[in-house]
Amino acid sequence: MKRTLFPAVLAASSLGLIAAGPAAAPAENLALGKNVSASTVESERLRAENAVDGKTNTRWQAKYYDNQWFTVDLGKPCAVGRVVLIWGSSAAKEFKIELSNDNKTWKEAFARKDGKLEMGKESFTFASQKARYVRMNGRTRVGRAGFSIVEFEIYEK
Image (cartoon, rainbow, N blue to C red; front, side):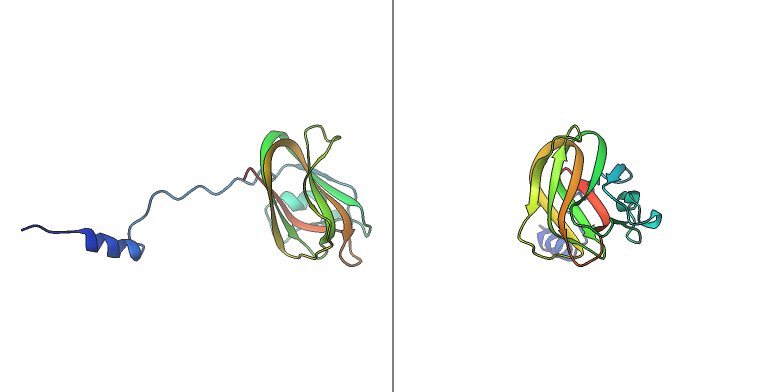
């Protein structure tokens, strides 16, 4: 007597009882715990390091001016192709994500120039490039508060 297991395997697979293979490892946040700098800081409680601490209950906030920046030093050149920003109480209407290897000469990777307001979590993908420094260069802020970033995440892809 010939038995066929195919219908049973198909049913088990559709119920999620059979794994399709090993799960992909989550992408590594290259910015987590790295050295940072900022043009201004509103207060010691809202310091720049808060934006790379992996916590969503802390944040960096700049003083109440337009034209502020936030930079992450990755420590060495890394392939960078995506930046995730979790905005705090004040997002940027116009800003650039810029990359550099010397912290002096910057190359634009992404720019929002239309003034479109986005709050919360945003992801910006661009052609992967080697960079040691990644900067959010804020031009125009939303409202009267300073630019505010809860988390600044950097990924290879």
